[in-house]
Image (cartoon, helix red, strand yellow):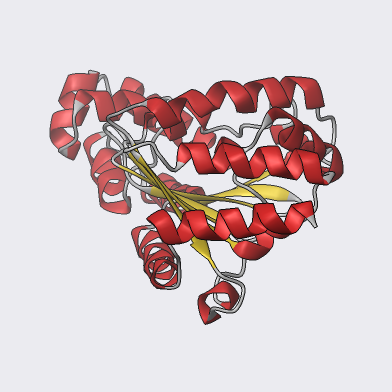
Length: 275
């Protein structure tokens, strides 16, 4: 979050040095006052034209404007190491509040069950295996379970695409995996939750290289993509890059099974566990 935080601090400093109120700057940059507050609190990344308009309104020098431009570019693909992310008690990332505020979410997961769908025991085992530095597993499990309440928000739409391979991966003993499949089966009945399963034999299972989540309809904010790497977590805000992920999600969706067909796959996997 270094670039985003530094950008927010610089923009606020420029506004205050210029003697402009938040309302005056918001009108000049053509954003709402709420968006301005979120920008100065590093909760929102402004566009490059907005930053340049901000710099002009504050009478910033060419050198400082160039520095702000670099910060914007860096903030649009923000990388936060796990050492920094794990400085708190939970493995939620710096955007947890913004993530939960999004009204439309699309997640693709090719390797394990998505965190919002995990049972407590499944979460405990995956977090133990993750080998993340300074991770409080018990606290992270509790936080992950608490966040699942967003699935029951009738005003929020959440769509998951999961590969069959992810559902088959033996995180724990058959009894635990059975409970995990039951959990997914029950969540499929929620009107605001859509769960698609990509069969192993379908070519779509090969085009998604890594997990990612698209957050849309963020209050007074822009869409962004969040993904996790081995060494860090990555937040992607550049509109062109977000569009690329959105296109990939649509291609993956074409290979997924939904509703009763998805339930049939879950039933088949459950039967396989009994063998």
